[in-house]
Image (cartoon, rainbow, N blue to C red; front, side, top):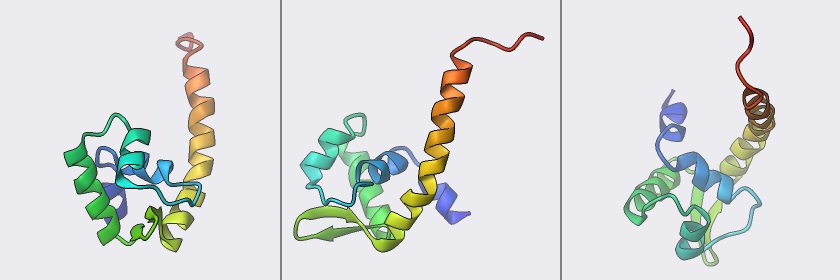
Length: 96
């Protein structure tokens, strides 16, 4: 469950999602993409994601590792489901 603990921390999933296209991003660009995350929280999450070997620092900036790309590949169906769920729940409550 260590992975779910890591992913449940504020900003972790957002950072992974911002890197999902496989292109490296500088800290500043990544922070601008994930604008709701403070620099201190982002520093902590990037450090944790690097320790988990999901993110790496390359010459071009931060990028997903092979493991990180694989994780994001598995998260994409959950994202599609969540979009449908959100659309359904915005229709209003189910009658009882």
